[in-house]
Length: 176
Length: 249
Image (cartoon, rainbow over all chains, first blue to last red; front, side, top):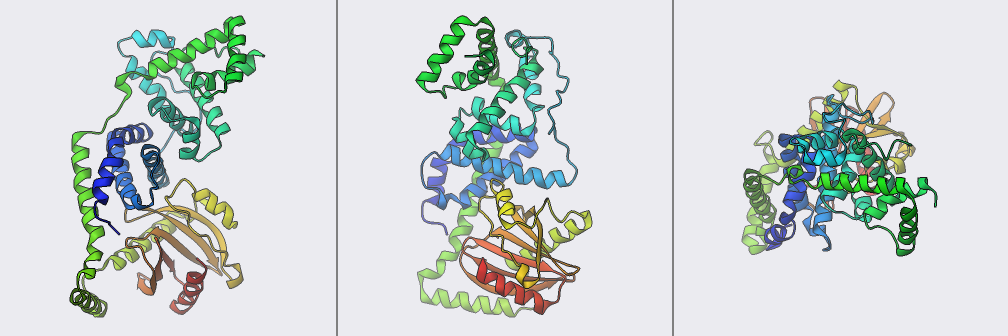
């Protein structure tokens, strides 16, 4: 049931986080068209459930819906034989010989880092996105992804290790 | 502190997720250990690399406009059912319209008809793909856990073994573009699938039945969820099962 002003409140509370939602969806789906579908579905879903939002961190609440919407979309599309990097095989990305600081100054560094993130397995990709791009705390990530904090920590550490390997900065990981 | 331990702690250290005592212990180790200092430096470099503005994807203006339009539509749609409150006459008119609607045998498809079509379509697709379950399990709790994080609600997963329906598993579905839970039961050689969807119009609505393309459908709404039971078993059995089901969910 819509109460007067629901739309207004939704626009004030949730829509300021649209960029964060889109960014998350874009990184998870890895293309603009699917990202927009996911965001659109997530926004409408958030609006439908807005009455159940008890206040608090709207961004965190909204990002959780975006993530869940993504997984519904993903499950649906996976059934129709869409492929996704689920293993942790490192794809060959350009710039493997560079260390992260060198990558920073290279002309195509953004492209290289982007490829490294995009080839991370989903479960690692989402924790790194939530931590590095959205600045979520471990506790928030644990809630959004619905795993214990210990799992968040181990996924983050493995995600970073894989990113370092892909970007060539493996000096620190040489002994591991 | 050993290097291996330190290396694990570098992540919470970097993320500011550490209590002062632990932090001091890591600081002490870093002071003496060049390798770990270097490992931290690499993590910091990685973090800087991830700060590049090129890695952010803000929403486009086109998307923003489209969403605003859709939200206005969704808002208008949600408000619509409220209008009978305005006057008794208007309420009576709604009842009249609803009656006419129910008596139209094959008139304009209602929302329920469209939903019934959609669940039957999904069921047929799943049968055609030979993919009835994403998760095979006879444990209601395990199925419920599997759905957590996938849906904005927790679907009830009733145990119907006493009635002769064995739980086979579950799958995620999209019904008219909305994610839904599909619970799969086996009865002899027949499959009974219960779709649990978020209700288009929350509230409590009595059991209703329909049939489409050889499938029998029974459906009702309870609170914010709508239930759609779909099977090829005979209409009477499906109705009986659904009536029992409606009491338990």
